[in-house]
Image (cartoon, rainbow, N blue to C red; front, side, top):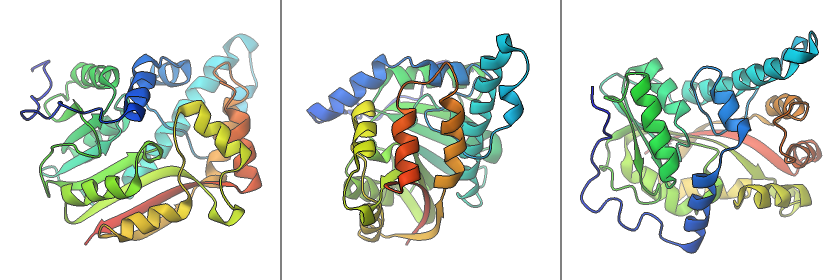
Amino acid sequence: MTTTPAPAAPGASVGVLRTAYQKAVAEYWNNEKDPVNLRLGDVDGLYHHHYGIGDYDPSVLEGPRETRDERIVEELHRLESAQADVLLDHLGPVAPDQRLLDAGCGRGGTSIMANARFGCQVDGVSISQSQVDFANSQAHKRGVDDKVRYHFRNMLDTGLPTGAFQGIWNNESTMYVDLFELFSEHARQLAYGGRYVTITGCYNDVTGGRSKAVSRIDEHYTCNIHPRSAYFKAMAANGLVPINVVDLTAATIPYWELRAQSSLATGVEDPFLTAYREGSFHYLLIAADRV
């Protein structure tokens, strides 16, 4: 089995980083080695770059002090993998001969989960060469690099084929791009009737702009969180019709409460909890069909 990623189309990697902001984001993720991502991934080799959902097992906070943090890490990882499972649930039926795209794939954990579930080809794209290299190495270690491949490409202009994908998702990566550009590219790549799914944090239009807590999250991650309404406007403009909208806000709060009690806390836990609890920030899943 080859260790070499699929070759890019001629010129596909030229101009991947089109703006100073994209270069800054790529630099951030190329240099990122946050234990909250790496230690959780070390649990079972699935490395995610997103948060978790569901109630945590309170017993992880009990028992021997010397193994307390290890128990918390394993539970946080269970919650983030549960989040990925919920996203994949909303892709609908996917056949082994169909193709999926993980836009803003991070270190690739969700792509590997999708291949294990559906048996199909999965492509991931990221503007971080470090993430792409790491993800391809993980696919090779698992023996799935013939089906799961990661590419150094811009999700706003991937160079991947038109109408080739049954499903596309963004898992907490839409806050780095213009939504109208993103959904235009996704609509181009999706087959007619294909499914798009995103899980994302968005600020609440009703509260009148970004709260102080949401602004702190933006600053921490070098991102630009969108208002909730922007997702539906951009989808409508690009032939993506929502079929499911699920408010996961209450379901993600336990993850943040547990993470705040771990050695992996980064200081951003308080802004997340404040924003969720005050209602200025929502954690949404949106699934839409390409029409």
